[in-house]
Length: 409
Image 1 (cartoon, helix red, strand yellow):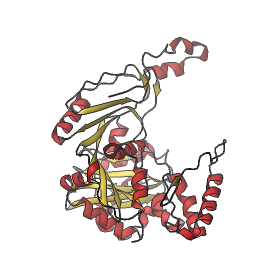
Image 2: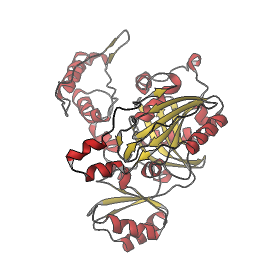
Image 3: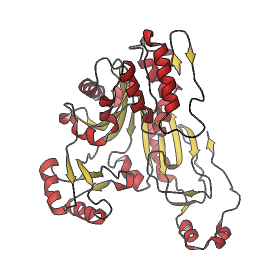
Image 4: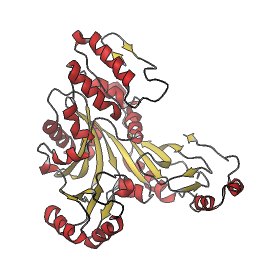
């Protein structure tokens, strides 16, 4: 998409019919456009993580303003992000690195000395997914976890990080010009989102506007501005997504940051209040500070309830009764469909979007839906199918779907 003072041009079918993992044709077109408009100080805005590196290389080659490849190390390489703190150690969670063949007894001593003991979170760096992360409550769990996983993650590099109890996990979208623009916060405080995904337990994520964030999470905007000044050049005008934990205005912890939302669920939440995608905010941020549009202010509070998928077959799409809050129900899996265990924020069997101007009523409706919704999944059906020879599988194959994927208001 090419934007200037008078028009917007959108280029279609830049990609070839066969998937091009290096995006060669697209990058060729971008270089061509940068050359054509080199006298007009062009800016390149990226919406996809896979394009960040090649676009950064074009910025360097064509002398275009913005992030260069070496600056993207903070966002692309987890190993680099761990060591390159840029003065953020004081507000970051304590952590230590472990590598080599697991030595549970020796490593437990290192954890006690470097991060103060348990509870803690263990993450493998190379084989990282939702189910490879360990949430360790005490030293015995720590030793048992490594004994169970030593054959799976042999000669792995681990990061052990202190666990935040009774804190809200958040992702704040900010710009260096306007400060905080909004925030997605987990309603749960006694368990992380990743723990809910691992255990296939429903959880809720709330979107707060800039003013709502200032009221509910005082001090968060100042914290985000501190992170931006510590990491980003003063001339950077793009959006920044800062992740962390919020306990109170004196205890806010930094986890990491990115240049785009980390899930489709987050993209949907950002778009709900202002009825436009986050990409519009990213383009607007390039223009610098803008006057606030008071005619398009949404005073509602918004949240989504995720019901993570689990391995098995969905028997029935449960009826979700209406509540006081406005509600939108989105089933992500059809009846009789096979599912796998959730591994990400977007791997859900059901999402329920709620919004209300009364936050107390919104949270009450959210809690009621989580407690009362029971989704029936046949966890034995897949085992039965896999244990039979192929000629008998047809006997177990479901008939016509009673109801396909649905979205209802």
